[in-house]
Picture 1 (cartoon, one colour):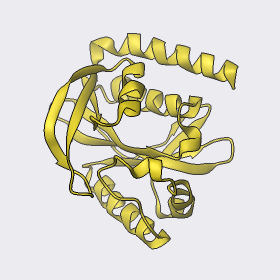
Picture 2: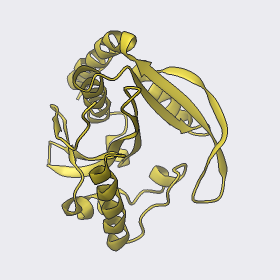
Picture 3: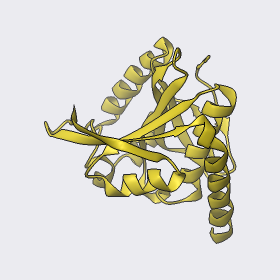
Picture 4: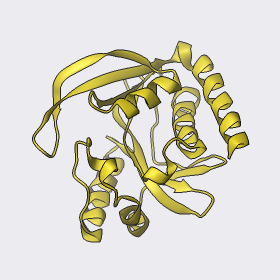
Length: 200
């Protein structure tokens, strides 16, 4: 699996390599308590903190351990969040979609659906993945429902798996999609996108 920074183009969203020039948009997009309430990391409190976080993410992308994307809303060409490929296991042809946060205005929209669609499509159809995993805080019921809506299978709960920035030892719910399931998941997501576009 040759995973490198790249741009993925959709109708509603463009996923492009995260850069420092996204900092101002991302800082504005991040100023909502509900984004960070159940996240591992704290919210950046200043633009300088956002730039510092992007700088660390760029180091990860350069090392190939994570591939970070800025989520660009094509309607106004503004960055509205971030996402990444992480826990990349080239030998096992697997990776995780995670580190994702989006400004609440795009939650439950075609943009959010298309974001996951593009990441999954690239993983299975270009990179040749056999497994893509997603995980979330057990307390985050909204996120669990969103992952299940994609067609991902719930695999179990990893108890006290991660310590959040508040010191809380969170239980993590693990999900996955495997290559033999991708065709069904793809059809489902394409159906959602058509329905969401009609309703927009």
